[in-house]
Length: 160
Image (cartoon, rainbow, N blue to C red):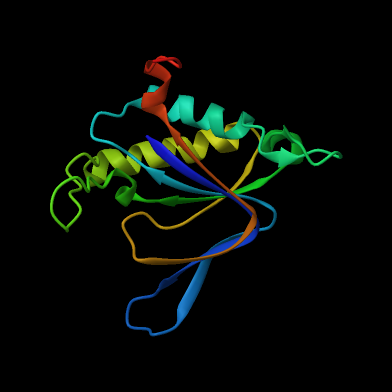
């Protein structure tokens, strides 16, 4: 699983309802993180557990001295979690991204929902987008701070 984290002062996600040109806001947060979440075809529950723990405990919020010493849990950050299969785009060949590494919709949705529940189980407030729906995400980046977390990294050595 991949999560692209963006530290924000506020964020929201909207969709177009069927037979309407108006946008309907379905999720909104104050200070916290937008978590764009992608699921790979080889991902399992352990990937969701790793990712939820890593995101919740990553120290990317400033302390009184302006240093990255506080986690989402420490500051009671809110999370806006949006499914994002395009995080698994393979752009090595041609001009059109290849998404064959992304999980199929049923498994991707199951793991997306599991990750959201794991964030909630840690005590974080979670708003979500709507899986497999065209969405508009509005955010105000804080910093900006943008970090990519990949569950496959836990199997890679730190030093090469």
